[in-house]
Structures are given as C-alpha cells and as structure tokens.
Length: 216
Ligand SMILES: *Cc1c(COP(=O)(O)O)cnc(C)c1O
Image 1 (cartoon, rainbow, N blue to C red):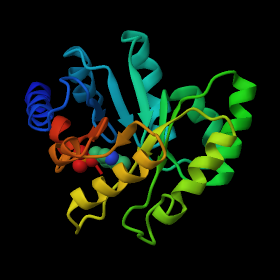
Image 2 (cartoon, protein in one colour):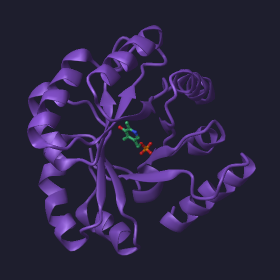
Image 3 (tube, helix red, strand yellow):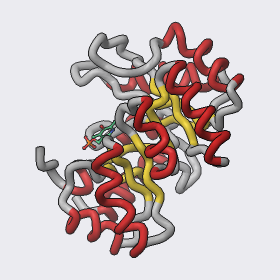
Image 4 (cartoon, helix red, strand yellow):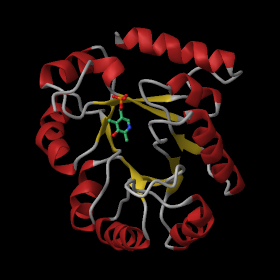
C-alpha cells in the first residue's frame, strides 16, 4: 500500500470519529526495511519514523538525517538502561519507558545532556508475562513517579495481545491516560490503526502496510 493510501485511510478514520484532520501522527516503522524503501518514503516527504532497536537506528539514521535534516525518529522497542544515553542522543521520543530504574537513569542523563526526548510509558494492557510494560493497576503510581522526577511525559503506549480485539486495549489505555491528564496515545499498527484512531490515538505506528513485509 502506498503512503498516500495510508494517509487517506487516516483522514477517513479521523473524520468518522469526529476528530480534527491531521490530529493523528503517522510513525512510519522502518525497522528491518531495506534503505531503498525508507529513502523512497523520505523522498515522498514523510519525516516521522519509528525504530525498535537502538543499534539498528544508530546504523541508518545519522546518514539519512544529513540528507533530510528535519526528520524525527521515535524509539518504539524495549530500551536497556545501558543504552539509555545513546537512545537519548538519537531519538526524538521514547515510547517504551516501563520501569523505575529506567526513569531514574533517563532523569539523570537529561540533567547531564540538557535535553530529554518526549516520553511515553508503555502499559502492558493484556497483562502478558512475556511483554514489557507497566501493569494497568500500577500505571497511576508509575506515572506519578515519572512526573516527580521532572520528566517530560507525553502519554501512554500499548501493544495489544495478538489474539484479542485491540479496541478493548485501546479503550483501556485511553481511560488510564484521561484520568492522569495525559494527551498522548501511541496505539494502532498496520492491522488496526483505524480502530485506534476511533479511540483517540494521537500516534499510530505503521510498518508493513507502508513498506511491505520485513526482512527477518
Ligand atoms: C513493528 C512494530 C510496529 C509496526 O507493526 P506493523 O504491523 O508492521 O505495522 C508497531 N509497533 C511496534 C511496537 C512494533 O514493534
């Protein structure tokens, strides 16, 4: 599917939900995609991308950014504490803040570096043992803890369980955000972004629908 088709589906979903046109940010997830495909999307004028791994992003984005300086890149995959500094130097936003130790490390580095990416807290809405994220019951406390550290918290992020109706998870994420006065909702991927927009997504993360299948 082309970028323009995805954009028209987004516009349609915003309209159907009674939302302002352009109120959803499209993060083009470029992980494991060949450089030619990424460059084609940059050539079409798109400037917001998502990557899962610090190492992979460090290998490709500095060069692309020289060519396209206004490009923003968001980290949407898990972050180890020992990669936090590199991540903060590389990314404009981190969607996967999920534990106190990482929050404290980011706060210390933010002081040292004098800047901090936008932050989203990942919530494990499906309470899956193998998945990262804060449990829904622990979300309010962790949000308060993050704010007490002075960190720039933009919103929440979730990845619903593959076998479940994602809308239930999107709605839960939206409720947790609303009761904590958070505006940002990073939710929705290739298969379900219209449902995420219907439930208030501000950032959708779309990979294969834009770029095609990934090279694993
Ligand atoms: C890979 C990935 C995506 C994109 O998935 P698609 O199904 O290709 O759109 C979105 N979010 C996260 C966290 C991912 O890891």
